[in-house]
Image 1: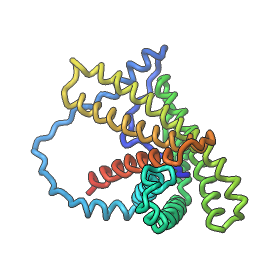
Image 2: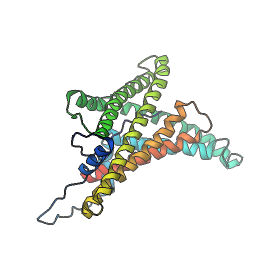
Image 3: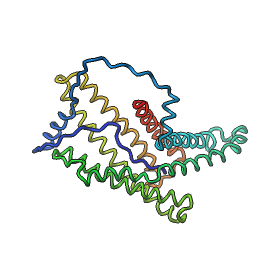
Length: 293
């Protein structure tokens, strides 16, 4: 079980305003999403390209970067165990498979188990991230909006920050129980609770993405024929990352849903969905680090 409390790569600029209907609110909000044109008096100098190895070095310096790297290795190994070394695989009856399996299978199983624990240790105290969001809502740093669509996003974000803190807290309890700090029985009790909060957390993230995609699409309709190509390009970029996040959250939902509903139809399901979510998260973080390099 892997938890993830994610925020979108791009956030929507929202300006509070009063409205009398949801349709009028969406139109006003869509208009506010149109990027303001910027002008530059001089040509920007192109920065030299940073080598990929340097980007990777900077990425693994981050705890989130190490987590995503280990996640890809962990679920790649799980996928190999399921697709190649499992008794139901196509190679199960071959002698070569039998000899290789007896040597590699226990080692890969140990790797996936220890990497899972290591990743949870990396994420200890991760509840501070949703707590920061929760504090912004409570202190008024996130202004209460008046538009109906904005208000819906506001409430989803507020509830999500609470659910995220609970999810991370019980995931920490599970981790500490697994490594022996707490009794093993505590870990067994904390795990299903963490799974439930994570499932709810993902559903809120998906709803948040869908609403923002709808708003960006409305803004794009307002821009077409009225705004500039640059404005439309920026909105397309926002929509791309919202859809990208939606794909990642969908993979998380497939992974978490397997545990949430107690499915046992395939060992490969979580290997595939976990690897997809890991690759999407890693690529997103890579781009973020590369842009700052």
